[in-house]
Length: 308
Image (cartoon, rainbow, N blue to C red):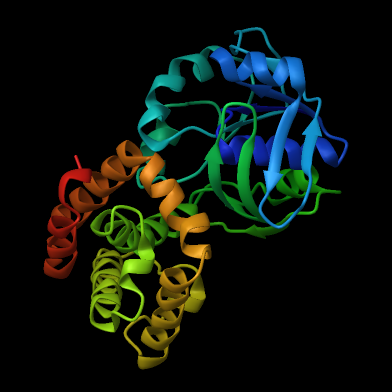
């Protein structure tokens, strides 16, 4: 199986490295100085919990030619960059396309690629790219599947990830999963911008952390009232005291340890344009469905100059 990873940020590099280590026929699409660096010195990734920097000699291309043949293309670009890749993907003959990352309009993307098998995924990986390497934390877990009502591609997904170290979660309703993910992650992003990326400033501020939960619940309520499913299913009882307690524990950990920087603020501070676009899109969803989200709007205002 020939695989192209289209995009060489943190998520794309980790995905390419993990597939390559499992013996997959993987090519990475990168551009500019970063492409030249990988070609010359290999893809270098420093994992947070490893003393060593891994080096993978992954083949690199700088563009996707119309006649290039792959069994699957993973598109791993920032949210606001996806439209720029659509013409190239349409012109190429590859049938299976998997968009990886934040997304609140997956149906529009799927509709823009008629005749393709379009899937969506979210990988638990974070970090930042340096001049000669990626510094990251990679939990090797990926949720992947198709839109509700589309034909199942569970078999293809098993084939792609067979032999890898990924924990693969198959999700047949990725539209609702990605909506819910945005509703959970954006309040945490607001916290990053309120503190200029230093979440430890909020350590012990239980009042503010509870407001993050309030905003998340506003988002979930809007999604549910619009007829969508709350996913993952563990979050379905989001109005309960148990859910609030679990979230408060998570946000306290996020603000009290280095995990907050590694898993949340690093990406938020290095992807302001993506987070701004994601916020605009999910607010549009709220407005189109007549939802009220006052706490969300208050936190957004407190995020100040960052959100565009």
